[in-house]
Length: 239
Image 1 (cartoon, helix red, strand yellow):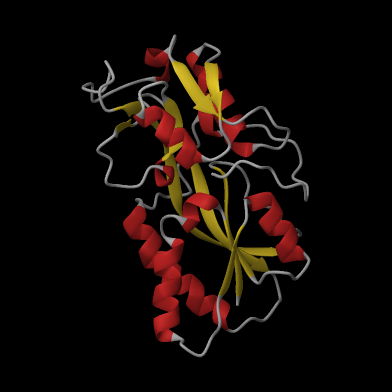
Image 2 (tube, helix red, strand yellow):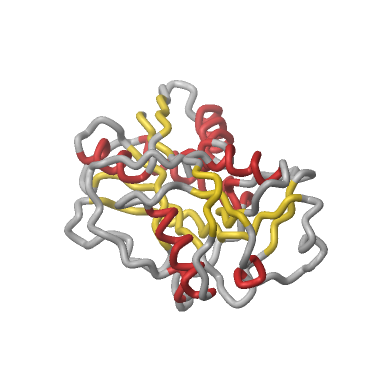
């Protein structure tokens, strides 16, 4: 079974989920490739992988009925304010994005189709200011390192900042609840016997990594980013 999964899925719940599957199905060979969602869906449609772990902006439609994909909702990954452990705001339990006005941030460059940057732009627009992105980084593990060094702050998905976290502090975004929805995706009508068992293995593992929320709750304004149509162009950001 050929699997594609985005960076922070590969550094959190995907490895234990695959290990659990392999223990139950030792005769099934697993191959994994780290792929961001746009590239994973294109590879899936081309038949080059069998199942993809992808994310979408929370509150957006998870594809149309005729896009040819089946989706299994795994959970919502909330965005958090990430601060250096010694930051002046680190002792506060509640923070809004507006509290970060004047701070230096890290994040990806503006990139058409770059979903993570779209979420950030929407969050900052709701807060009423344009942030100074002083450190342009494509990989969230690099972004975390710059926050830990004390040179900037960030807004990141919670899965991107796994525990333990002695070097950084995470805080919910007060007044907003932006998140990304994580799914397992496969081609509708394609019969790969291992897929149902693999997705069953992923559900309890993903649930332990972050709280699964109801998809029926209203989506916050910050999580409703208007995005250009998805294409097979793969963005560089490792999120």
